[in-house]
Amino acid sequence: MPKLSIGQQTEGWEKADQGEIKDVEIQIVKDRKIVLPVANRGFEKVPQRPYEPIQPAITYQPANLTFTTTDYKPTVRPLKLSQEEIAPLFGNYLSAGAGNYGSLFAEGAISTKRDRNKFLSAHLVNRSFGTGPVDGKNSASSAGQGEIFGKWMGSAVTVSGRAGADWMGMYFYGYQPATDIKRDYLRQSWNNYQLQIGLENTKPGDFNYKLTGSFGFLQDHFRTSESQSSIALVSAYRISDSRRVIIDGDLFFISRKDSMITNADRQLLRVKPAYQFEPLQGLRITAGANVAVQSDSYAGSKSFHLYPNLKVAYNLTTSLQVYGWATGDIDKVSLNDVRKENAWVDSNLPITNTNRSLEFKAGLQGKLGRQVSVHTGFSMAAIKNLYFYQTVRDNLNPGGVDAGILFDKFMLVYDHNTRRMNPFAEISVGAPSSFYFLLRADYFSYDTDILLDAWHRPTYRVSSQARYNLYDKIILEGGLVAQGGMKTFDPGSNTIKSLDAALDLSLKARYFFSKQVSAFVHGNNLLSNKYPLYQSYNSRGTQVLLGVSWSF
Image 1 (tube, one colour):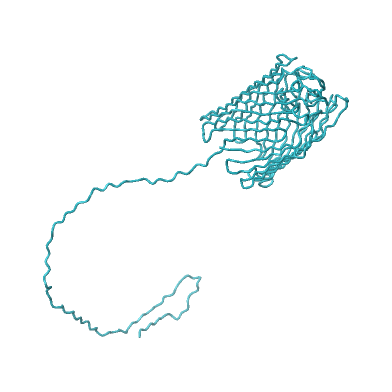
Image 2 (image 1 turned 90 degrees about the horizontal axis):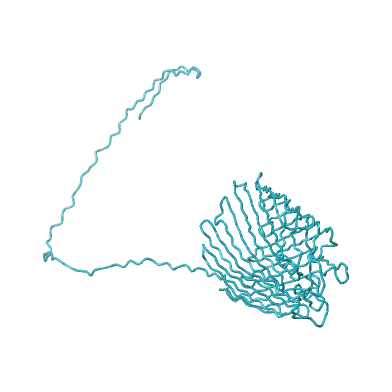
């Protein structure tokens, strides 16, 4: 057995703080040996088996073998993938219908498809009524328009052109009750022809512009005509992400002829330079001036006008914005503008521009959630030379021919200084592709200077629209308009007369038999409220139109 002995001095260790170890002697003694016996390692080999020859003996006879094969020419065929079918576009369509009041409707449109460099289209629509609200055919009417449009998009410049016409036909049916009515003497029509060409940059850059030149010619059934040429520029130069210079402007040349007017030439030049910047995140300020030079002459008029143009917009959140304006301008007024509002105007109208000397506007607009949009605000304006429609009652048509009866027409009268206030509110819900609802309310207040009232201008207007798409199979649409507060000076009694309020409910439904064929029904003025459009000119009652459409 091994022994292990450790000898050491009997003295104790020194203190640790002296850092010294005493001498120590260690002895290891091993005096045992293990002996194992020798192992027996003998091996015996396995004896071989005796040789036995194979009977019979195997012999080998090698032979030369030859073989031939036919030529193999593999045919490599590339994998053909089936071409993905392009979804058809049904941008072209024809539509036709008929309804009560001897109504006929026709519309058609055609355009090019899937061309990145050019676009061509044509559109034509017409709606006629064989009878009307007063004495059948004596209040018939028709209206329509047609145009050809083209656009060519180059690498740097895009060129567009438009040629079109619109027409209106009606009768002066605002006459006093009579038996012998010469219908042809009460006929009126407006035909307007337009040409337009435009230039703009194809791709947005630091400098963006759009230059438009146009010419129009208007003619009525008698001797009134008007030509209008214009050039308009909309441009902006981006200095940085938060700063840019804006220069807009237009120039108008207007010439009118009538039985008592010969070559009444008018010119209007408007230039609107502005500087837009963002001093703070979410705050955008546009500061500039509106400069106008006109040739119109009337009481208190002048040729040169300078207005402020200050607009401020601030984003309260990413989807809600407040804004405020302080601006002014000369608003162009032409015979074409007037007849679009009121087709029963008299001849030889005194037409001059409107001087919007100062206007304040403020509001709040944005989105509440994903599908609710709101817009509310108010505007106040000081306006000079604002026009109104005053009733004129006599027996002469606009051509100066005696119609044999007394009937109402309308003449333009102007107020020197008018104060106008317009609070408004608007809300929309949904998306037009599925469900959409819009409601807007306006209130108008006019404080006139020399006129007794704001003739034929409403004091309130409420309108709503709704649209519902049911699985792209049925589309339902509806609208409601309520308007009132209009007054007129009645020439028969020489008193101020309030016109009845208007309430017009319309519904539309369209059913798709396929993606190309559909049928529709339109109902207008379903409450059959024959409200006055102007004094003595009531609207038609309930109107129903049935029709079909084909897209290709």
